[in-house]
Length: 434
Ligand code: GLU
Ligand code: MG
Image 1: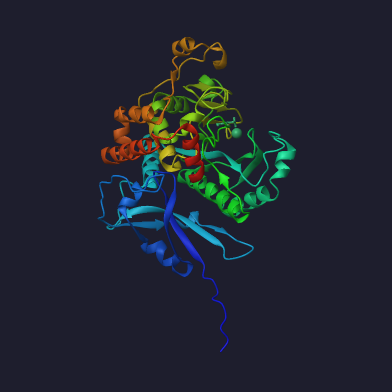
Image 2: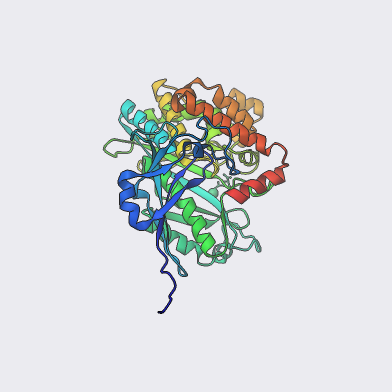
């Protein structure tokens, strides 16, 4: 009898992007995928408390309980490989055993925020995540920011990456060699609702998978070294009415924003110190939020200033959007976007208004002038950001008291775990993970 090798069997990894912004879950045989769409795949509540470093921290769930990951077929990604079997993964919601949304499901958190926006003002959110990363397959020398030389140097990674994004249903818009050595940036067209955040997760994992196929890494950590160049994740947002008509732009409005957009963005400015605990939620995130890096340091808005927290991006009514720059890849896109939407809805409800446009450019203002213009400095550490979140009563309603306390605990343990490391070691730790 001829003994031949097994034919490899395709698997689909069913996963959740969790509080640590890690996609975790389990793989099932591809032949069982259709059943999994109906019945889901069992998962363990305490896994939502898996820390960024891998250990389960303190958890209210202990060793008990069962939850169910129910994959969303619209997020399936297939990555063919020249040498072996295709990788497949699919993102999921987490439900209770009874079939209700689980209170700690990040995707559900975003869905609730979007429903609140829709119920309150018949408005939808259009979003895209512009992401920067280091591709280790490119050489750092010569370092030619934005250069054709640097672009060429990444070989066929870019073209393969763009093809993979398109095959996963995204519309790639640009790919470029960014400012830092081996740093690249990719943008995709915005998508309505949850899809915007799904795509952010899918895009990162696609970049990582393709880099690994080439024997390299796509590294999204906010700072690979303490004095290096930051990798930001810039979240572009605009509002649409329920029929899809843009409702972001009014040439007469302050900063060119429509009335509703002005209130929405004013809510984001108001809550920004607390938001940073969900959008720049790692110890290393705060090495990026320092002066002279084209990264934000104050809670402010500007028409076209890339040192501002919120940059109004010009364009026709359909392109007009606001870019939130206090974000990086250590944030779970569902939590980040959900919190932004909640803050925006608070702004609409309270009819908050943006501070008047300062006469002087942000970069030329003293700190005192910035304060007089209504700006506040961003938190300077993750601990400060977590305290701001803790002290924001509205956040208790956004997340619910149990989720909020779990999140604060979870992130304070991360601060603790990094407390003995110097900045170099902190950056290395995150660079190893993201
Ligand atoms: N790398 C910068 C950041 O950390 C952004 C540069 C840019 O404006 O694209 O956010
Ligand atoms: Mg950039």
